[in-house]
Length: 108
Image (cartoon, rainbow, N blue to C red; front, side):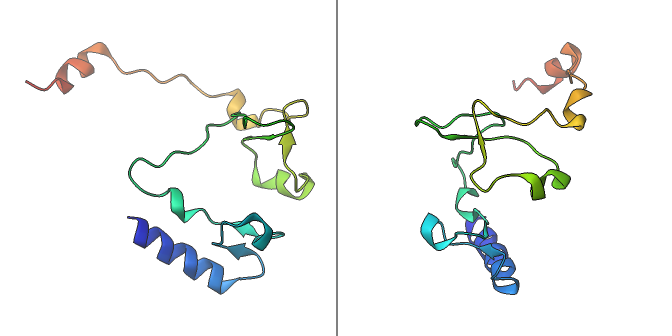
């Protein structure tokens, strides 16, 4: 899966190198969108929405809408200044699985 993810990310970055990059070094990707193909493998982790980094003044992983992109500072959001919750998140319905369905999933 990782070679495929790298190939797709590379193709996108090559198509528009002014806007996208697959280089993870922060100083080499300034002003471009980093396509993180590296996290596309078994056991790879990512940060959850509203997750905090463990360093002073660190940014927060925040879900946003495409329309919000032009108004967001390049540095991202800090813990004391997050944006409002996207409208789509205000009406999320809690999903449940009936116990009867869980019984059907049991392995003998």
